[in-house]
Length: 297
Length: 297
Image (cartoon, rainbow over all chains, first blue to last red; front, side):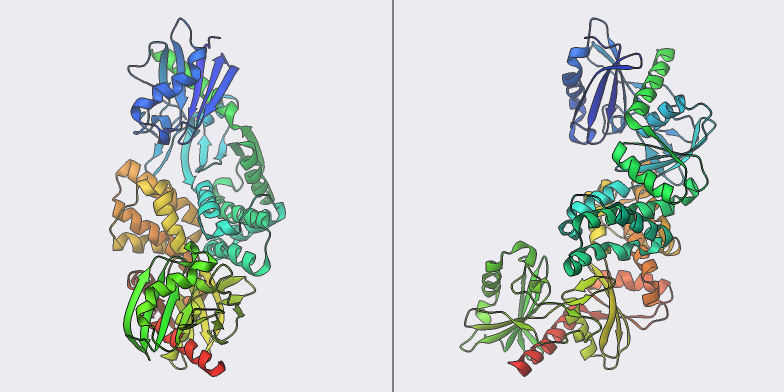
């Protein structure tokens, strides 16, 4: 089967590819060959291995977003500065590729003050806006590094990154809390902990070790500890982003599980939240980016 | 040389021993055979290896404090509950030891609500109070897990543990920030960052990723990033502990470097701080604990 074009989401730790016919997915695949694991000369071979069967007689467009465009990536796609459209310029052509592909990388966005950067999320936002004409509001993209993005008149006005997901991983798997945090989920414990740091964010630092002590002294359930840790950290993030979400039109773009957790916490604060599927937004955004390559090539 | 008694500070990651004659240090040694690395049956041999030359014809008292008294330690020394004197009961005798030693472990302290525990710090506080008659106030013991301890009339009234040191290690060495944090120290950057989260603790989550972005966009100095990270985290801790230190008599017990950092941050807030040497406090506390063993054996 030969694809009309190939969509690629290439992050720090993963590589996902889709064989596309217009907006329709014909096939898909993924691997753990993320940007952090690859040397410069390994990007093309890692990709070709996965898409070999989708190539044909004519060169196929490959459009990629994510950390693949960082300085240590396949080709550096320099940041555009906000305020700007999510994908304001044509993707960067990767030079000297295999003749069977024409590969492009979508540039990330930067904000000079306060300093911040994104790579990948701009493409998801472009895809979201393509399906929501005249949408103004705030988009939350939860993940390892959660982004909060203010959108107005088709442009990204400002954004802010939170290390909440990475902090959760480090604290639950590599700190002293690893002995007390286990699998499972306790919704009430999450909600209580989120409300706690939302109202008293300065107490976050005091609450964390309590998860270990509550295990040692009171045999606190390990699922409860997990939910409380998540709630404490997300509550702290919501305290910091209050001006972003309070009284705003709000959308969450992310994987189902984490999106539901954020949506639940925000709804408890009276926020009205819509959620959008991350993969659909990525593919719609890469399709938009591909249109830009065809105008300029 | 035969010691009169042997003092032992046995934490999660280290083992330190002193050959004592009364309050005088005759010799000392240390190793990385902390409690976390040892099986139950390895404690005695790890210790004997280091103190062999200090033993004589008669059994020598060995008095230990720290995580060595945890459930997974040499012998479990059950927590005493606060409020109480720092070392309210005689240390626990380790059963079935080598005939050349009589080994004791100082119990830790627990606080039922909010749940918290300490092992080792209670001994340092006992040593501090032995040299500060009628001292009332708050003691800060900075480290991997920093303790803030309220002391009144010779008793520990309440305490709280902060994972600030462990968070700093995880974020600076294992998170995305490791690429942007390096060696060196920038006092002004530390002070500015500490003041920042002290006045706006809810912004901590928003500030962390900025250390990475400031490197990518503005080539921020890696020593500046290290100092800012430390300042952001310690500032958050000081925001949470404000009721502990505001207008209180204040002492810091810790290693020189970290004690100076905490003292500096607190002095910028107008607090009056005295500092005490951690090793001296530990040895004075172990000497106090040894006196308790001699009253009961």
